[in-house]
View 1 (cartoon, rainbow, N blue to C red):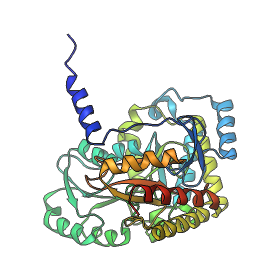
View 2: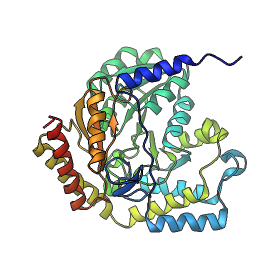
View 3: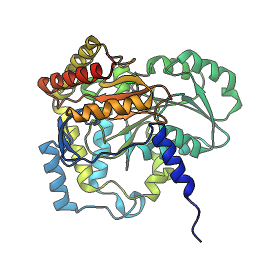
Length: 393
């Protein structure tokens, strides 16, 4: 007899009634400044395609060439028969780009966290985690079995407090923070965090998913941004945002990287990145190392858009990065705003609980180097129109 799953329908209806149900739209075109979504051509303010690389011709050619040489899927895990020369080349190139000694790649940034955290700490140890860290950090921490001690968001003083109170209770300690926080667009004070951590014999780990391709010289990330090379033990990253492809990475101390080759469960038990994806990531590194033009354009677009949104009267929170939250309060209000934007030609999805706390729902605008000034002006005018019609500005 099949299980009674009526409770799921009740939960789904509860989400609909609360304005929390996620209506997932369908894309019918490549990523870019404009998309075809549910059959409608709209301005794209939704994607993590920071540098516009997801449909770059050089990356497409690299992927096509790799398919011709290596085929599609690796058909094996890395530790048995799935490691290709392309994987080793990408890992060497990532280490050089990040200015560290070593790196290892995974299937996604999420799996990079799931691999790394349980490999570094266990049930006798502790994780000191920023209270707003990403879900992948939370899940990786739970998998480790370590005791999780949260500290106040981006607050080195509170981190020092909890370390001073509890560090001596555990054999090993891991301090984890996002680099750029994906919902608010603020940056962790990693330089101050390092100054705290170095006095407590703890491993320092930063998830730089939204910092790569954005912060630092030519998009090298938050460690480069703060000049902390050799001081941060573990950098987690993704190849699905600014790099425009898919995959995850861990960069930093070569001992950590070698340990993950032996004990990183997604490395050992899930198939490797595909050949075309890997080759496209190498092509992205070529583009980033050749010129800072795309990163510079991203920041020029970001500064312009944020300034104009504030002039209109929108609350964009504490963001100092291309992530631009438009704070609206209740989830139902954010969903209504998103629908009105779409009707007027802008694709920008509402973000509500549980992704963000109740009462802090928002439209999260993602600015890209792919946007032209006229794209931004058109989007700003639509935000102004919808904001006025709904009494937000």
